[in-house]
Amino acid sequence: ATKSQRYKDKARDRWYRRNYGITLRQYNEMLRLQKNVCAICKRPPKKRRLSVDHKHDKTNPIVRGALCHNCNYRLLGRGLDNAELHKAAAVYLESNFDGRLI
Image (cartoon, rainbow, N blue to C red; front, side, top):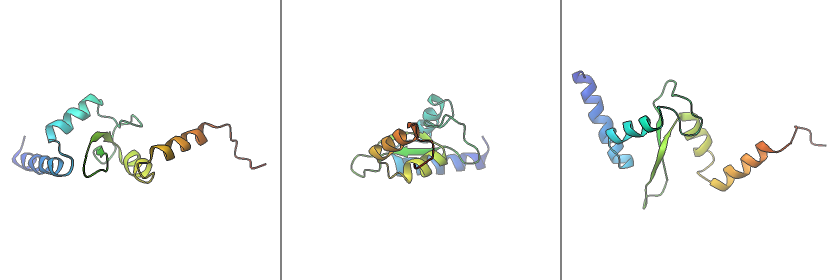
């Protein structure tokens, strides 16, 4: 690796340690285990690297996996990490609702 890449890797390692309690090596292993795809939609990242998804609990931070921006921010983030809300949305999407109100 080049000097510039080593510097970036050290900075990224510090970021993961400080924010998620994992190392860059652990992040890369998580990606390898997920076959470099989002844990939800199973698509590879486009422009951004996969985000670290974690439980938003300061007393018990748990890394759950790596997600693309859409799944992490738009799906989980806007859904407020609320499993019941997501279950209700899944039931709604899987219903036979054809779009007509009457």
